[in-house]
Amino acid sequence: MLKDITIGQYFPGNSVIHRLDPRFKIVITIIYIVMLFTGDSMACLAVGAVFTAMMLVLSGIKLKMYLKSIRPLMPFLVITALINLFLVSSGEVLWHWKFLKITSEGVNISVFMIVRIVLLIMGTSVLTYTTSPITLTDAIERLLSPLKKLRFPVHELAMMMSIALRFIPTLIEETDKIISAQKARGAEIDSGSFTTRARNLISILVPLFISSFRRADELATAMECRCYNGGEGRTRLRQLKSAPRDYIALAVTLLFLAGVITLKIIGI
Image (cartoon, rainbow, N blue to C red; front, side, top):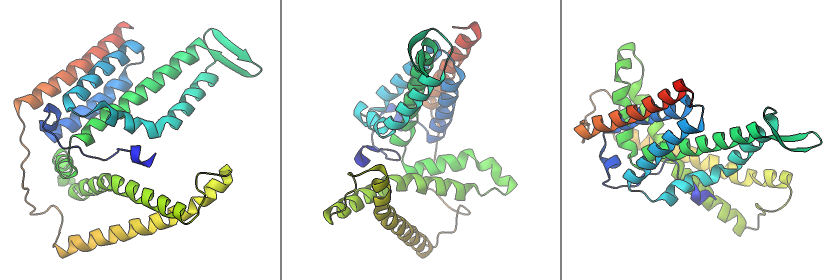
């Protein structure tokens, strides 16, 4: 299960999405999220699904990698679907047993919520899959640069976000190694009651926390040894430059958002 988690990973490539300016990719991702949560009908969600499919194809990354990002969240999706399925009482009753009741409106809302969450995960994964952490840090710092006039620590915030995102795959790999080591020592992590499994997690969490703090300390020491002093006077190997394709991608995204808003206004 841990190997299926692909959050924070970067897959190098030369696709159209890879070549986009990371600043535009962040803005497009924000517009995409607004697009998904603006529409409240299946027609609006269909527009978002078309845009998502277009992004996945243009990214040049295999579909199974995006499906892997959804697999660890399946329990959350199932719980969300069940909550909406049994708690929504409006609409035509399709099934009834004692205090449990499933209605047509509950089914529609459950399907709508699951599809929206799946599209949200797959669409936002395009940003991290096609953008390296360093480039993403520079883009976030550039977008937030106006806040520097208010003495807001823009560079430090961007660096923290980038490091946190970069360390997700590392911590997942470390957790997998700890689980394998504990199993080799005879620990029963996957068996027993829920209470037993929760108690056995201590043997995983304690070494994981120690390892995380050790990695953080080593990273801080390495940055100090390299005389890292933040964003002041810092130069960049690669300068961010926009191109016509960036404006075209932004215009297409805004066009899809306008389509969703139009469908919502006319009530489709």
